[in-house]
Length: 280
Ligand SMILES: [Zn+2]
Image (cartoon, rainbow, N blue to C red; front, side, top):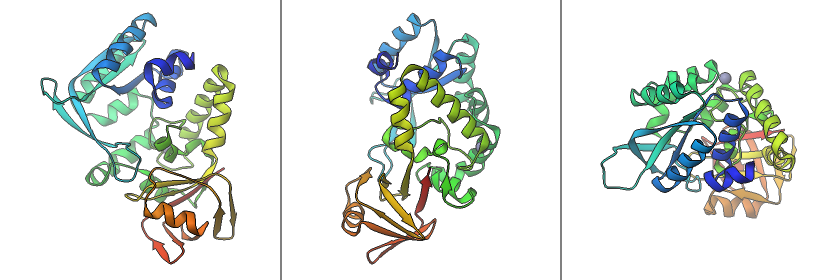
């Protein structure tokens, strides 16, 4: 099933959203897709007896700085606009839910959209509270989530920073990396993946257990085989979103000093406003 989904939906993130929908653990999903993809997806939904609604607008993505092409910010355009854009697709087994999602998003009612998509109330509240401030930067909530979280060691279930590598068990930013409701959703999702593909589930779990250095503009860096002793992180391999100057520096030093979860030092460089997290 997952192989079949990947042929239509390409990324793991989109394919797994559909898997949760088909398996009945999600009531509705929202995806974006270009015209060509949406034609394929329409056919897929028809065959699976799923209802699909297409947005009355197109969106153009503005990729974040340092996220390997990932875009958290999108600009809406009228459907008649000549520029190629992406459509939002609202899919559900229930025709009314698909239609309702479309109407709510048209009205920019993010709270109700979140509720229909099954996000926990605590995380919707968190999103609404931080929305204005984050939309002015890159619309990414990793740092506010870290701010809300006690310490920097968390269960791998809520590792939402791996979405930049197409690996995640969540579809929303958790309000706290220890958010109980998010962990429960992620556990259910992992069980669902396991049911269809044990190897993929194992790979996901393995990849989500890591140490991560998040920066707003200079990239996201993943350390797989690391050693953390006191406040010193040692590693010999880095998975980066960007192979930039900071990546080179991290590679050369093979070591980071964790001054606080928002401040690290590597070589002579001190990074402020960063986020350091360990997911186990
Ligand atoms: Zn929450």
